Length: 598
Image (cartoon, rainbow, N blue to C red; front, side):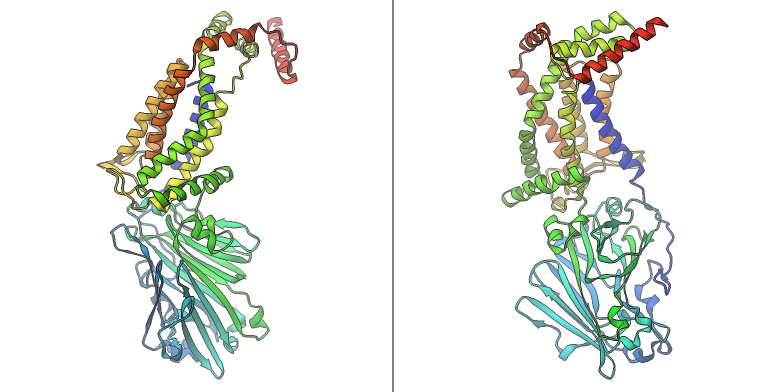
């Protein structure tokens, strides 16, 4: 492993260390909560029922007094993917169950329920706060739901005066995770002060994963502006995060590690306020989210009926499902920086999706994925090995130069550049192939922690490839390492040391560089110990195959022929020099002459 290759790996290692240490903050279990005020800020603690803060008295209700009493009726809309329970108390979503998924306890996965989520319209009537989530609606025509050609539909209506009513219609397609809500305020605009109508959503985000810390670190609020700008609150923080959004909002999503609950409006929300903070129930609730979205007021101001359409997404963070929902919604699946994102989007995800159709064992899918990628990168691996072999052949000559010129580093550097030129060697040729492979390394670093496909998929001793495989649970916590021992991470570390040893046989580093080459695997062991077992297994298999490739290439590379080639290059008369190299050599000579004059 040559100097340039070690430097490249060291830089990547430092990036990963900074990422996991400075941005992977722990959520405090004793974090304080704020209340919801009339301006849209929290008034209840997380452990209290959400509805307590929104109770309306008879004196406050006014024209809506009759609607604050009633008997709630439930309606279920269901397809092959999702089960949505609606209630006439608020004409709202009461519970969402994702039928193809289970939580960490093996129970049906409830993305939200009555205890964790409350949503509805909010406005003032004669200066009294009215929340539709606390009003009792009638189910239209007394029917619980009606079957249509492509969807199930239920209609909730609330009369509020002569020829005035609020109506909300929910429909669910026969497949997929999108729930549509058509809403109408017909003749009711006169009961809304100043035409200010808001949609409010308070969500205590339920825990769905065994590794609650990893889930918490991936939970945030994302939103997409009408000008196609994507924004989000910080994920990995123990502080309360909030933003006042002063631009039209196309959609907003409460995004977890593997699942998302989002809302899209056919007419962008005018402005909004979002808040995300730690939970007082860290074992059950990941974080607490509060959203207030201001609806466009042009119709109300003109005295016209206010109507609109919301489309909710309650589903998994799978690329195709997110992408098909609406423009920009796939950004809820973090795939990395632009180059890394493109590799995931156009290479890794399509290959993985193809393999998933024919292979049911996800450990085997990872193995095949490694083989395909290694085959794709074989020319770069071959080029890197040849570069290391050339440097090994050249090493005695380079050592002689260092011994000849002692501590005169400028003279040594100039002689090295001259020697590289004579031999026809590009000193960066060993580093470039490594750097070209780094985007794929980082792509996997983003793909595995966010790939729901590995969730609760067992392989060998790992019951879940989406989280770490713990073979020993420690009674104490080791700084930067954790309170458990991951076997796949240990195997990855051992295989990296094996690969490093093999590389050092080709190009023998000395002193600190040799020590550094063996410290890098230990560094990655600390970084990856709490990462998904699937990622560690991928790196383990990748290292073993790389070692095998290196051994195979070695059989076809004759060092004597490399020596002959370099000797021929040195004997050739070079008549044309590159201007950059010529200027570099002239600068070095001038520096040495100035030093000698002094």
